[in-house]
Length: 399
Image 1 (cartoon, helix red, strand yellow):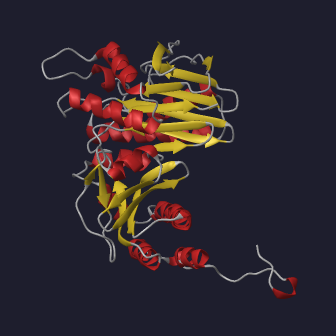
Image 2 (image 1 turned 90 degrees about the horizontal axis):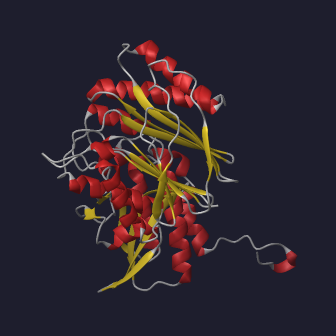
Image 3 (image 1 turned 90 degrees about the vertical axis):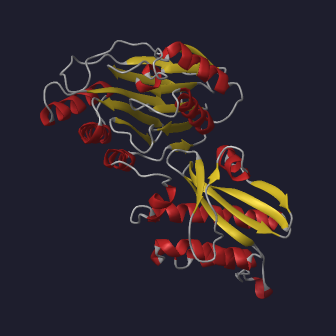
């Protein structure tokens, strides 16, 4: 802060403050469809042109431009092989010299999750431009996040193909598909993105504790999606009233048993990670065992005693525990990830899954990039088709 005449603080508005003020002053009443034009106006005042707000599609394969007055038009960009995609996967700004100046890409980060990328061209770029654009991107990401609760604009933009009703339900249940904090990072993916039915996951960071659950409801279509909704709802209820990890099973089991026929069930895995100490506890209800990744290789499965799937009234589950080391990652997945196969061939199996994980982990990338590449590798291996949901969550204790 500078001191003006008479010793009083200088409260005059700088150019950067005025620019950010355009975004903030009327933010509480700004309709969602005017967010893009407002960003374009800010870019123009900064001397920029061809502004883009690029949103990641549900399959995490494309970046799709948001439409709006003043925003540049264009078709979807492939994440792989594009500057915008590199920005997305690294969560870092990227500058590229182009014919008419410098093209700047910035990640749309909000609470550790990333919705997409901002792009703008300037004649030249200095530190003041970088600082302002970084803050503009943070504000735009925040405004998109809050407005997504009461508009379909961003959801429609992110869809590159029609979505089933069951998938609509599952995506509406999810927390952000990624979260990055100094101590822990989480990334997940649902496949098939536009037709998933019974798979889902949930997580919450409460103080020093990361809570995480993954479920796989039997069957397909709306029946499976409805069962998954009940199971996740019961999990959240139990988690929010702070019952013990073993008791969460009973809340979920009772909810499913009371609403569905006796032969209906949900496999589940519930976890708690102390982000201060690395202590990981988990309960397994008929779910595939997670994999522990250390030093960029799968070192072993987190085998544990299991109880019956949710809905079958199993005995009180045993809580297992392991202490992670800084940098350890844990991969949780549904059986569709390992039991899928190429047409007419044997199932992939966990040995093949481990081989793919080890190969993708070699390059020391963050959990979002590894989770995305693993899911897409499996999808390509089965010829872009699937006979079952195949969902994964990868989390890292950063220490």
